[in-house]
Image (cartoon, rainbow, N blue to C red; front, top):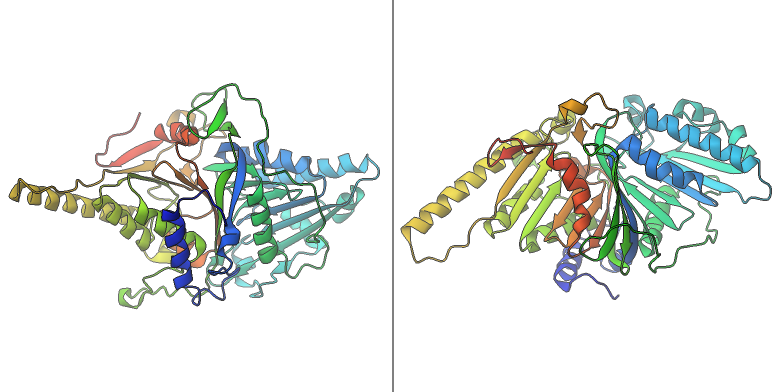
Length: 490
């Protein structure tokens, strides 16, 4: 199919998936060389948000749910008693009351899918791909309205969980409203004050996301929430939106900023000049990832899912720069690809956390981000020393300079720590390569995301994407430089 993505990316990505399709035949869902082009599409991104998970729900997702007419599909990984759960509950009560006061409204089908609620829920969870569907009598424990209240507003609700022992969570997070518009946040329904991001979009990518959703969450539900009703859809054309300012690149943007300039609660409204080339990048869960505490028994290569293959292709093809914002970095293929890129002269910037979810890191990969980053720093220092000696030994040699390596650890603003929207760590996931390829979604650069969890990413081809300043300006004042020198950023 026609695509705005360069062939230099598409062809090796397709070949990578095709070479491993037999190994991935049982993936959930599975994609191969015959079906992979169905993931290539376009989209119209309309808004970008950053802040805590709660502020993103309050500013972006919950208003969309309140305006839903036909369907709502909300998927997250972790569901916990929290301010966000309370806000979802209040929104559903408000929506039911509003609809009850009107007559002749079509039934609103709402599905909620999540993977993790607590230890016992995961220990005793069914291994069926149909998952577990919560009965209405169990909704109260999830902080959801009762069935009678929802039915008074012609709302049908299905709540379902999917989890596969020992470690395979369904990690994607997204919202689809009326099968026409989607939000892809990085946040869970939880109490954590973490830095998060979200993209809002419509166009063909929403239909690709909906197809993925039905293949994963549509099985085993007894209600009609997944019925193929024809709902109105946004055309894959540009929607005119007001903009008070513009930036360079393929989009015009207006910044919707908080009154507090230091607040991480920020947003930018986009008006693309044309539909943006987009690829939906799923990554299936894998129950048995081949991890072993004995190093020589470990499985060295990750499953070659569409997401993993895309990242490895992007890293291998990078010409000038790689920027990673990720909660953790413990995936050896990622670190190996970074070292290779640095050797080619590609600059690499990593923004991560020094000590986030340490027990989870040790349980899933036997190491931590700080250990992996320390080893990367040592490797880079050795590479620089060798390159320097080689240049000194042969003054006429035309040695390619190493790329610049920068590593930052997230550090909250101490003067704002009493503010409800000041994140304590960063949970945002963003990869940008050569200032042209932008990847957002659920996937981390840790072993769990590359081997065991189901993940979902959205890859956009956006040369000259200046709206990255939205998260850059927040993180620049919340970064402690670990390499090349331990000098706090200002």
